[in-house]
Image (cartoon, rainbow, N blue to C red; front, side, top):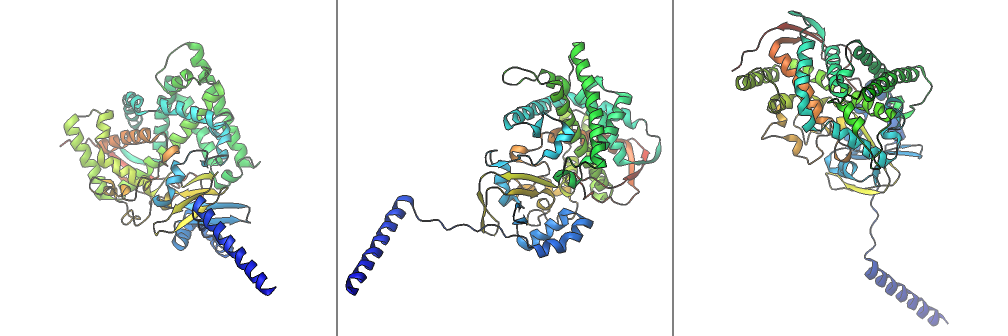
Length: 489
């Protein structure tokens, strides 16, 4: 009996081995389950709270990156899990994956009260994709070339109001300047003078009251700041609605973004509604003006704080003027390589979007620079810190130092780590539509300032507005000026 039982057990064991070998032969070897990212402990999260409240999220994210590496997860009571991806080695899928795998979903719902219903993050993917195409077509580089003369005219007209010498808040002046530029390019002659000043005030109210971090998580919370945001948005929508209807009723054909939107059609050949046009105009105006204004101000603060590069930018203008005279056009702007690098470096150090958010619809794996592979589970919220990624010391030499030459020919540090080493304009499927327009605007402004004024920063170098989802320079950026005419070489 014992012998029979033993033989039976051996037979069963051999049968199981044979079945396992056959299954392995058919389906391949069983894959060892990849580890999930390390989870930030509650002890650390509680200890980091004072830093978060006094210095902002980026300082905390940087510290977690130092302690845990380029991939780590924050778990909120086990219900909400946010996985951070830092660096080009682990963010390729984040930027390039199709919407069916990595999605924006409702993560940007905080923009709906700002842009309005029926556009962008309030519509389905197909409609949003088409609306983004309308925006892309309206501000593509080939069309932007036609706006350079208008930009130069607006800049000359605005700075002609300065005296022979004095002091100004650079942030305020550049903000007004870019509002004039945006008004000319987006809405043409339909919006000028006092109306443009009112638009600027309303945009400021929306920005000041609708872009705090708590607005990202609770965009419809009935608090005074959100009520102010909604009031300003309603007034701005009313103003733009009158402009849209006036243009349509007049039959006049403009050469601006508004006209592009009026002429745009969906696949079934129906045009956008007035509300859709208004929403997209506000989205472009808000995004473009806000980010360009911050970047242009940071560029000035950085240049005026680093004499070496300030002098280099002036020398470049002398050289350009020696070749082309006072004229500025699209081609000449492209030749301002030093100024381009100065803007790019300011944006690396002071990104206008500190955190990019996505949602994992499917699980995927990433491999760190050290060779560790992690499995990112389906359902996780994904976050990529632009600020931390733009300051990685293995990509950027002395990342805390302002050094525009790091982007010059021969160094090009942003290309060392791969495609997503520099993400100030995001990247992949959701790359910023207005990158070319932003550089064009800022170059027109700073080429004029460098040619016509002696400038000096007379206030302390500004701090970042870390408490805002889209941070800018805090407070006034005071600059003294004195008129002069640059002599070409």
